[in-house]
Amino acid sequence: MSAEAQRRYRERHPDRVKATLKAYCLAHPEIGMKRSAKRRETRAQTQPWHSRPHKAAIFAFDANRRAKRQGATGILTATAVRELDGPCAYCGALAMGWDHVIPLCRGGANTVTNLVSCCWPCNERKWRRLPDEAGMWPVRWPR
Ligand SMILES: [Zn+2]
Image 1 (cartoon, helix red, strand yellow):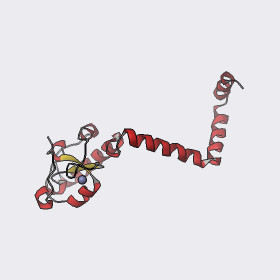
Image 2 (tube, protein in one colour):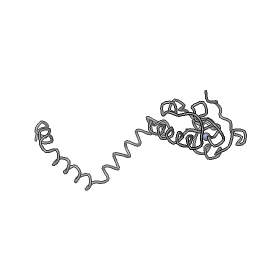
Image 3 (cartoon, helix red, strand yellow):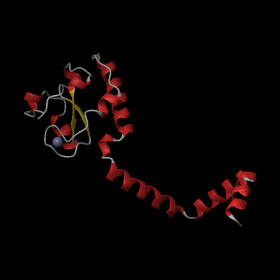
Image 4 (cartoon, helix red, strand yellow):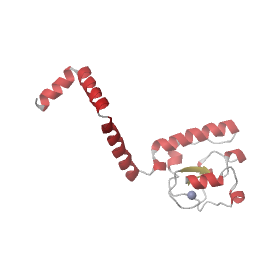
């Protein structure tokens, strides 16, 4: 079957092609895993974990919800959060997320001026404390 004939067959019988592909994928589950592993690998190289667009969106959404619940001011957007990309502001390690320098529960604003990129260990260590309580000062204060 030539490539042209294959294309015509796919156009004429989309449901048959779909069923065949589905059956093949179910019979060979390792293919999907191989694919996603490869995708994960290339993505990790080209884009660090914390800078992936959807991570910033999730963080912004989550922070906005928490801020609203706690009556804090400010609205974050994924774009603004993404611009704060960089190493951890406390230890310089690869940042995996962001941190409110003045925690929301302590009256901090939910704005980019109160945010720095932060790694998980530092985020856990700082917890709900102010910088001087935790003894942790960000190397670069947010704009
Ligand atoms: Zn850190």
